[in-house]
Amino acid sequence: MISSYDGLCGIGELAERAGVTVKTVRFYSDRGLLPEASRSSGGHRRYGPEALDRLRLIRSLRALGLSVPEVHRILDEEDATDAANAARGAAGTGTTGGTGMTGGTGMTGGALEAAVAGRLRELGSELRSLRWREAALRLVQECPPGERAGRLRLIGAVPVPPSTAPLVRFWRGWLPPRMPARSTDAFLEVAVPAPPDDPSPAQVLAFARLNALTLAPCPGTRQPQPEAHRAGGARAAAVLYAGLAEAYELAGPHLRRGRDPRPGEALDGFVGAYTSAYGVRDTPDFRRRLAGQLAADPRLDRYWELVAEVVTPPGRRPEPTPGSAHDWLLAALVTQTGGHPSTAAVATAGARRAAAVERQGTSPRQSKRRGSSGLGPYAERPPGP
Image 1 (cartoon, rainbow, N blue to C red):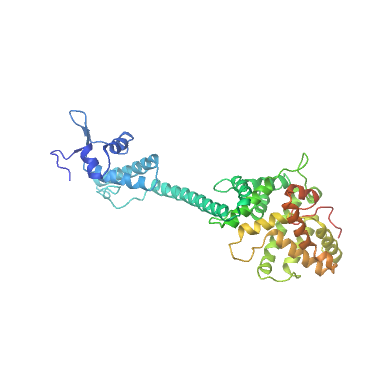
Image 2: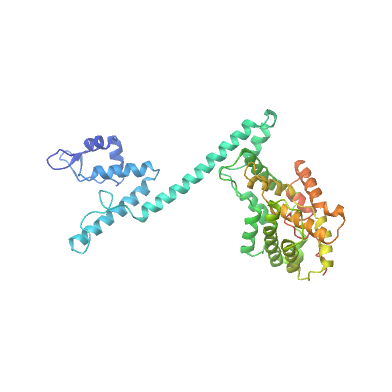
């Protein structure tokens, strides 16, 4: 309660009642958050009875982590609301009391909602960063001493919070330059895994290895392109990848249930992606040629192995990836077309070879020079109908 004869209080009394320092009150006053009612004859600040509630509100907003400019906007909006309500009340057309921060019916302004939403987004990013750092620290703590230097180099190359920008750049450089933007975005959504919000140490290691894999230098002066991009052009590639994405989605439930490769809707969609892209008919002969060609194409199996580790929760069966779905569909195609057993085993053998090559330091760009991307596009001329 303010005890002065004029209903005003000095800066010291206001600070004491609010539980803050005089310096804090002066700071908010100087920035226009806490207007003074008047000055004494000696030039000292004087505050009205509403100042205590306003100061407490300012402290509450600041305790939520809102910045001074954000608090200023919130208070300005509430002041404008109070003024408008007072004007309507004086005219006899509406509410006569205040509805703002000093005892009204609540704070419903957009400035508060926007500030709170923004702060929640910031906190989400901060929490993801903390969880990532915790998992990275556990990774270093749990690994053998002789491996720690290498782990630190891998982890140190990944920003916090982790970014998928290197992976996106890798694929954008590989896709046809004039491929439609919508098709490119759809491809990237499938090919680029999002870092887990609450990763395990193993997932941190897998993402760091994936980051290093895509940043490895490409031998030569230009990045090699698969023949599919040259033979069919950007729009044919867009048709191919859209069809493959649908086929991989259909194959996913079979992979999750551990079913053996088999003909069906997924395989028909897989073959249809190629026939649509190259403008040929789906015939038994085409399927035989397609099976032989795709079985011979090296792929980025190490990339997809790491993707599976990143997206699979600890202790769960590995999630299907475009790479694993491609191998399953290829095996189904080889079985359907009566391919030799050694050909049917190419997908598995290819995965082992690619993993061994990647462990020896071959980059995915080097692997692309020898064949396809792991998403299954033709590496050579498409087979005839």
